[in-house]
Amino acid sequence: MESNKKITIIGAGISGLIAAIELEKLGFNPIVIEATDRVGGRVKTDIVDEFQLDHGFQVLLEAYPKAKKYLNYKTLELQKLIPGAVIYKNRETTLIGDPLRDFSLLVPTILANVGSIKDKLAIFKLNLELKNKSLEAIFDSEQVSTLQYLRDKGFSERIIKNFFKPFFSDIFLETDLRTSSAMFQFTYKMFGEGLAVIPKDGIQAIPNQLKSQLTKTVFRFNTRVKTVEEGCIVLEDDSVITSDIIVIATDASKILGLEKPVVWKSCDNLYFEVEQNTLKKPIIGLLANNDSLINNIFYTTSVANNNKSKGHLLSVTIVKSHNLGETNLISQVKSELKNNCGIIAGRFVKRYRIKKALPDLERVDYKGNEDNFKFSETIYLAGDTQLNGSLNAAMTSGEAVAKLIAERFK
Image (cartoon, rainbow, N blue to C red; front, side):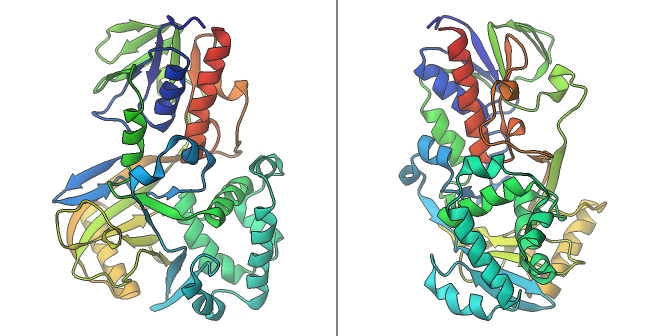
């Protein structure tokens, strides 16, 4: 291996870190350029007013194959969420979940008025089908919208409206279920094979752990890239870095001047301090009213964390587009929490307006091929933008790019 080649990675997010890990294993000493002050990309955590705040409500699905390969779950001290949800509609609450993993959810799920007996039988059939379907087969199958897929599987409009839309709107960050059916099947299968978890130190513990595995990689933080050409990186201050290989592990649209830029899904995430945890357990709350601006809520203090504050912290996620200024947005959210959930929101802590939350991809892929990752002879692309919007895809892309580079320099 020609390990003396200079390889520069732009972006210290998940895909960039995985690429660096694999390149180090092959004997390379990569350089990572990062625009912000730390690793993580979209996977970051802040400490504000003694509260631990993730940049948007994020969970790790412990069944992700690449997460199991690259992460030490024990060290992350993963906090488990209950495999279910509390649905708020018309000022009433309904508890549903997976009784196979939490037996206490059996009776409320059977009695839940979110769908018919036929719907619950369809869920059983779907669980069995996806349990026996490989991930490769899922992504190789015909891709239609998630909404069309659910209708084709025989689900009623009632359960689609009361459960699938609010639950998967939070995951896909769009309210029409137009996301590819392959992405739905993949995500549904991952939920079925493991739990949704959050590291005790917040979601940024994931990139932090990946960075700790790197011993030869050099990081340049607070360094913004303006453009990239063959073998050449121009920084925002017009200084130039030459490199044998360049890996763009972030949105490459602007720095490469692409004619078709990546389209992104956005969301709002607001945090409020509250007097009491009305759910009493680590479970997601979903708002199913059509006129509700809020999509989901979660008490982040319902799991173990490093908060120094003793208060309760509520995360509120908004997926629907709106034109509200921050003051009016906070007022609207507080009103909905009170009227729909019976929650009195206290002090507003922080808002995250996440403009690039997930790539909006018409068609998704699982592993991809050289065409997904090789832009030119010296420029490679990594990130979930190349496959599908998931942490697993980000890891897969970083790994794939490192393998392509290794093949080139054998």
